[in-house]
Image 1 (spheres, protein in one colour):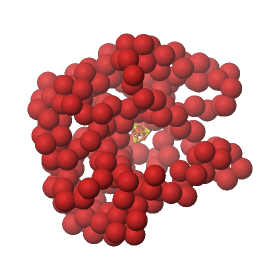
Image 2 (cartoon, rainbow, N blue to C red):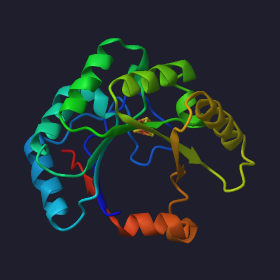
Image 3 (cartoon, rainbow, N blue to C red):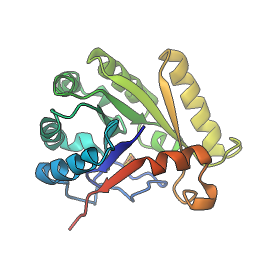
Image 4 (cartoon, rainbow, N blue to C red):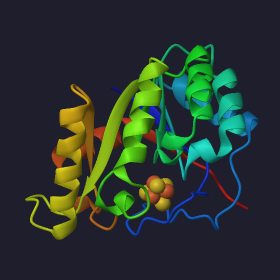
Length: 208
Ligand code: SF4
């Protein structure tokens, strides 16, 4: 699988201590739809064409702009995902918003949830987000960060409990595991993760 990951903003409604890009409510700005189109189509034409992953920051804080991105890449035949912290799970309008995204080519969403996110967002909100996304017929994956490889750290034990509960309640939901920021150095990268990095282009928003 060769794909493109696009970090479109560093603006986020929360501030996780492990955040790879130091995202927070204080960071402003978002990639313009024209820049998004130019850079993503460029990578796609170079062969990174199996998926396009839109992430931040929190993309759903800027649904209007992300909607314009979807229109710009409507013609590209690839899987399209948005990575989110699911803060919108309890908000009714998101059922319609997600259906609109689906109609404009979105394949699914990746919801980040682990000990670090649980300090800001409770699990019921995540459950509601999963239900809304499934109503919109979107594929839903969960992404969790682990600090250690043997689940001995307090945060990893909590993360494991959360994931287990969600997996039991939402039969068949796929889990994507990630490593905490700071352990992402070459000597810590698992061979499987290294393989992903070599096959993925990361396009970063250059904030002013
Ligand atoms: S929700 Fe994601 S983007 Fe936002 S601060 Fe946490 S890790 Fe960073």
